[in-house]
Structure formats: C-alpha cells, structure tokens
View (tube, rainbow, N blue to C red):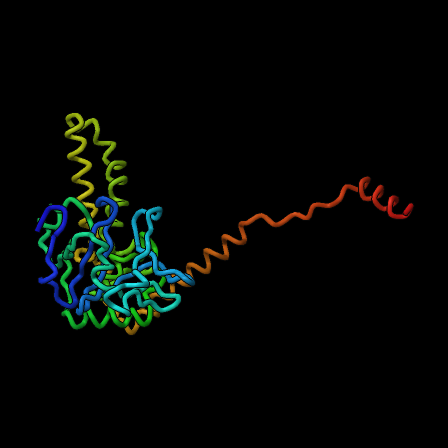
Length: 281
C-alpha cells in the first residue's frame, strides 16, 4: 500500500478485482474490472464506425485507442457493441505496458486521507466477486450510458460494478475519485485564499490548501456520502435514461441558440441591371 497507489502483481489478481494503470506520466489513470482469463471489462467512449473504442482520460487531448483490434493473443480482445462504451480487452492491451495497480476498498478514513491522489481507494465496501463480475459482463452487453469525464467515466464504471452504488441524477459530478480531485485542487486553492493572512508564509498556505483538498476528497467519497443509492444492474437502464434525455435537451438548446442562416439578397440596383442585361440579349 503506497501513498500514491497500490501496486499489485498479475499473480495476485482475482476475478472481480478493480484494477487501474497510470497514463501520461501519472497525469490520469484508466480503470477496469478484471473478470478472469486475463480479460478486463472497462468503459470508454462509444465505438465509432471503423475505429476501436477510445481510452477514457482526464486529459481529452491525449485520448488514445483503448483496445487493439489485432491482438495477437486473444481474438475477442476489443469486443465492443455498437453505440456502447463498455469494452472487453486482454490485460496486456488494457495496461499498454503500464504498471498494474489495485483499487482498494473499505480503507479506514486515515488511510484514505493519507493518499496523495484521488482515484486509488474508497471507504466503501466491495460487493462479492461474483456480483461484481456479473455487473461488468451485463454492462458489456447492455452499455453504461454516455461517457463523461466528470459525471460518468471509467472509474465511475468500475466503482458501480464493485458496489452497485449510484448518485442522484441531479448531481454534477460522478463517483470518480480522480474527477473529484481534478475539481478539488483548484477549489481548495480558491477557498483557501481568505486564510492567506492566517497562514505563516508559503508553507502555511500549502498546508491549508492540502487540508481542504483532502477534506473535499473525503466528503465526496461514496463510502461517506449519504445520497448514494443501491441500484440493481438489471434496473440500471432506467437510471441512465436521464443522461440520454439530458444530452438530447442540451443538443436541442444548442441548436436553438445557433444564429439563423441569413439569405443574402442581391442589391436592388444590381438586380435591376442584371434584368436589363438579360432583356437586351
């Protein structure tokens, strides 16, 4: 158990484990559920025609292909239904030469607060492994809604598979610890500004900001929050329906806000001259 993340060996993996690997020099992590047989089910953007799924990322500009369509080891590596972001890949293609880490569940608050990065552990308890694998495989066949960096990303997918917990639809951020961290760092710096006069120089300011950052991560953890609800995976489509409705509403509003196309009319004088020219011919 490290302060940054929990490194594990392949020999330690068991079906139902929540695993992740760091990408782009530890700038973000990609999460999935190990389902056995060297296979991982994880959540990406929806499959586009002629392309593999795209790896979920905190940095959208660094999106890369998530599954190799020509895996030399497993013919079914990269299996993904059309219009779904849930994909099955082999462990090697999931890791892409990155290190293997295990997401920790049921950690004490002191351990959670000691972690330097979000998205590595939770105080929530995991459900039994068979329930976790069942959710992951069910969602592989039925989807997990639309991918969203802050509201519905790969970590949110893995957390749901492990716990069955969802947030109310009106929440603006999902269950993801790394999304909470991304929002929490600037907010901690912002809200700690009034304490500048109370802090003893840069070290004091850093201590106040770090404390607010850790507290913010803790209160947004699904093991601490009181507004999470347990949802059976077979009933999940009804709870995900609000996301589709919301996306359609936003698309409709966006279209309404676009300026109407203005037809350019030929100036009257130029039009009269053109008509006279045609008559003379």
